[in-house]
Image 1 (cartoon, one colour):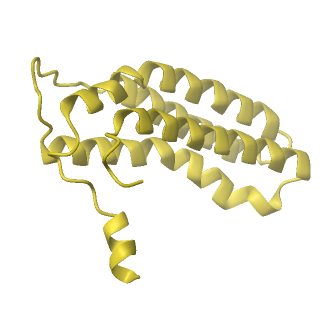
Image 2 (cartoon, one colour):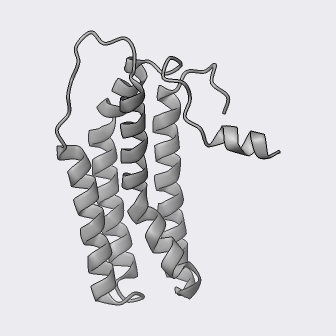
Length: 147
């Protein structure tokens, strides 16, 4: 059982993921940035009366900085690349974790403390963000990898 759990947390071999799969994720980045910003606005407006405004503004600032920072970060395009380096795979995983962090912080802090309607908005938007990320990543991962 422990070996199965440990294996699930390891990155797949870089030979199993090609540069075209990572390229598909990078091409989807502008749409993901737009969705992230719209969803942050929805959450901010919905929770304005339920959470201290200073905390919510700090969360919105973090979310916007992370989202726009990922979009504007310099990329090193390699034309004709067919393989993916271990470093590129680690970087993509790191950026995915950074992008998800604001969406993990707010529910962890406020999920049980919010009024029911605000809680429902937070759960719905957070689940939607997770589902969108999963769909984006699933399209780019080869079908022969275990899921």
